[in-house]
Image (cartoon, rainbow, N blue to C red):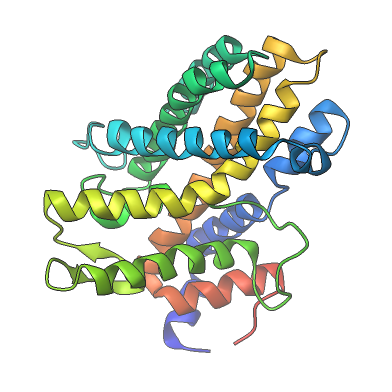
Amino acid sequence: MTELALRLQDNAQDLADLQRAVGLLESPTLTARMANLIGSPLEFAVRKLPSAVSSRIQGVTEAALYKAAQTALWTMDNKQPGKAASPRLHKLAAAASGALGGAGGLPALAIELPLSTTIIMRAVADVARSEGFNLADMATRQACLEVFALGGNSGKDDASETGYYLARGFTTEVMRHLSAELAGSAVSGSHGVLLGLGPKEAGKWLARVVEKVAAKFGVVVSEKFVAQAVPVIGAVAGATLNTMFTGYYQDMARGHFIIKRLEHKYGFETVRLAYGGVTGRLHP
């Protein structure tokens, strides 16, 4: 065991934070939670959607995520890193936007999703700030976007890895490719983070990361669309589902930024292995 690993094991608060983060990040997926809410699986219904509808949902999702990132990550007050988050406020706002969408189909989704996604993005950024992260840093903005690609352990992941670190690897690979494309315009930091981007390069960076993250976020948006189409669900479930979404991504954000904070202190590999020690799924 390395010196950093020993230091982590000897720090009761950091170890408790790690255990809390693992509990949040390896929790049941949104798919499972929505299926439990409506009383039936959603995957089959999503596969039965016409391709034109699926493509439209994906397009709306990508546009909503891009707008949310621009609105929330580039405009939120960043004067008080460490300020306590306001989870209830964001859940109430999300519930209101969900009731607006209800069972209105694609036209309602195109109106409601940008609003609800922005609320969720602000909730994620709020958590990041409460963990002491600077929202002006590109690394923090990348981490906020990563949250939308995160989910609990689906039971289909590689037995030697966790769903959380697989998702982290997905966004890191995207950033490696961008580092090569934008060489000379930015300095590549640790784990694929791009530093020192100008406005043009930052726009390209945002568009590419959003495109990749939206491919994963779009899956749960499609499932939510199907769930709200159930006749007995309607506007009530629209509010309930949006509250569920917001709470879920707040939990993912809390776990993610606890892990990022610990990585800054102890190093990526030390925390990755300690995370695996808690789950029993990672090995050196």
